[in-house]
Image (cartoon, rainbow, N blue to C red; front, side, top):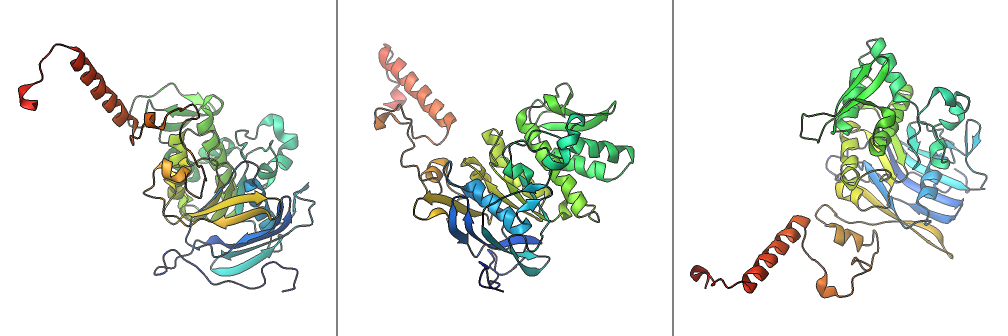
Length: 383
């Protein structure tokens, strides 16, 4: 290798579980970036090969998206079909384990194609009206670099698989249902895919069936992104017939986008369950996805200053027993205060761990006040 490469030799394999030492089929070992947008020079080494989730956190404008884009450039290069991803004279080297072998890609030299990438805008599906722009805007990297990306339409594929009686129809449908516990059924009726939503996750009562366009944005976000993911996996790995056997690296910017906190917390685990051999690299502004982070997740914090530019550092924390207050004030989020901005007296701050506990305490105080104001005698058994 020449001096121009940021990674010059293979690094040692690192695992969370050194006894099993089971690497994912495709997993990132090391990232080194130089001269890309706000990045002067930064990198991260020693990423365990058995981590399924790499989370990026950091304040707005600190460079989380830049890091994700740089990873794409390192794996794929600076051009995707007709799109130039960057004009920067940047250098990016990515070391990864691929199919059991060590590989290093220098600004796309490996031409690694086992990946999918998603920006925060991911509600627009391929349609008849978008055919002219479809090829360009649905390119594998487009969504992460632009705000008007078009995702491959899983409903078209479901229809084709259904008509051909292809087993992939049922496999993909079941995968989507696992990711959408509030959806009871996905059906094809009169050449249209419809979704039957349950009253709640545990209920058998359902609402009227509705098409994709009338679903809540959170549902559409998951269906659109995972549907696009599945189509790309099928194209990349046509020999694979079981959803759980797909192998890839997936980058997601703003994982929490469009999702209620309940969904933010559950989504990482749901995706890991459906795609156990896929590595996810995801940015988020929210602590809630961290509360659902699968075991052996890696947490990277992105910082920025004038002298050093954008920097990545790993935050080693066992977060599985931490509550939101602790996470917010941890090095991951650096909040010095978590009290309400309108709070005027710290003695008034409620410190209960749950809303139900607070409501119970309020009820007890209310009863005690009512008793004090009454003429009733204190019960002898409590005196």
